Length: 143
Image 1 (cartoon, rainbow, N blue to C red):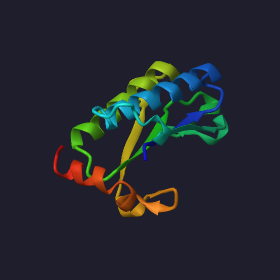
Image 2 (image 1 turned 180 degrees about the horizontal axis):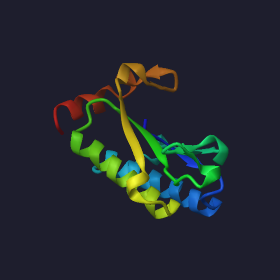
Image 3 (image 1 turned 45 degrees about the vertical axis):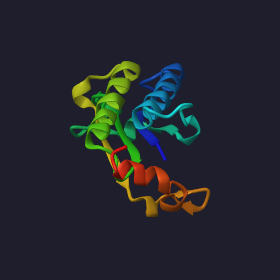
Image 4 (image 1 turned 90 degrees about the horizontal axis):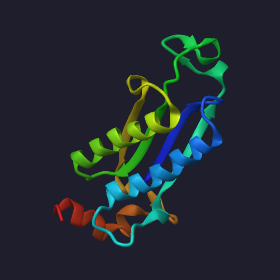
C-alpha cells in the first residue's frame, strides 16, 4: 500500500527533477518497507505530485507568487503495525529526497506518515486485512 504524495509549488521544479523525485521515492519507499523481500514489490508503490499554483500557496503567510519560501509538504501511507524506526526512516528519507530534487531548504519541508488499519485499506476491492493477512501477522510477531 505504499503511497506517497508530494505537494509542490508549480514552476519551482523542472519536470526532470519531479520525475527523478518520483522514481527515487518509489525505490526508497519499497526498500524501506520491504528490506527482506526479493524481488522488491515495486508494483505496490504509488508516487505522485500535486502541483499548486504560486498564488494558491502561502508559507508563513506569504504567497509563493509574492516570494514566499518554497516549502514542500508530503504524506505517505503505511499499513498500521510497522515499526516506529521504519516510519521515522520514511520521514527522514522523503525529506532528503525533496531537498535533493526540489532545491529547497530542509527546514521548510514538512511531512507525515499516516498509518492505516489493514481493514480500512483495500487491494483490488478486498480489505488488506484479508489480502495481506500473512504479512500483517509476521510484522506483528516481529519477523
